[in-house]
Length: 358
Image (cartoon, rainbow, N blue to C red; front, side, top):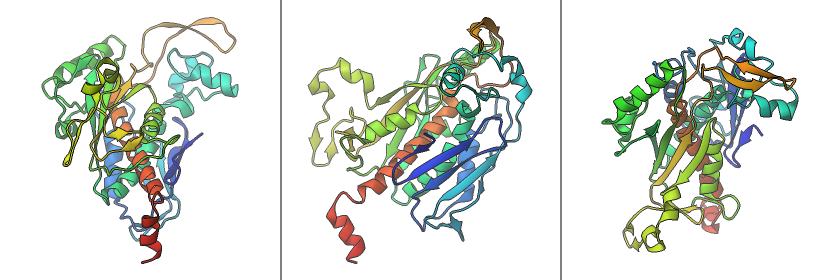
């Protein structure tokens, strides 16, 4: 599937080395102010080639809106956006066109379709995620109307774990670091791996503030289930934690429960979600990215004829995909919440009466 969401739904298209990539966002309520400068600023956060901690591929990632907007407002019809690719170097992949790169989707795409676009992975490339950020920007403009705020940043690089989370600092950091005291150590880990033609993994934190209670569709469309699905659809993500995550399995029930007072929850071990439904507290998740599989060290593999060969990669790749991936994770969170807001509108008859009896 190339689409995600129910009422607020988006579809992405395009390949890494194709002419363009883009998305169509459907279900956007009419009357939202479509701030194109904001959308472009979101694209700029994710775009490649900005510093030595990201791929050297230079893409402007300039968004062009094709439909769904009139006089600066959403019309309620499908909102289409396109990003033209500018800096492909397809020849870098000629030597791997008949073999399967370790750690990539080459083998599985070939097993599924019997053919594959070997130029940067084609559809399986992280280049596709630029379209998600564009769609996520539209979702954020909708969430802004109801005061929901989403932040993200990097908590861990190569096992170097943050002890504090400063989302404001992350916005000014080259690697979106949440802990300014450990930022230089994390940067050094990335550069050291890069010098050795290797890569490192990392963990992103996504935080949601001012989320209303009641979002989530039990039992088979729970909020946390959809968040996990959204995050796991991002390239290189191998695990997602909601709230305390795996630590919840290491403590007793009394320690894990969030006791309640009339002014709210005393703690937030649940990460703002109970029974698959938001409880009004902050939503907190961790997204774990594996080390970038595109490395410049000789590796053993097989080709399309199942002959054993040596893989030697060329090209331009992120030494730590988690950095730009954190922006994508933030965008996917926005898309999930926008969808859940619309789905929740019909959960009570009072909501329907407010619209049709006014």
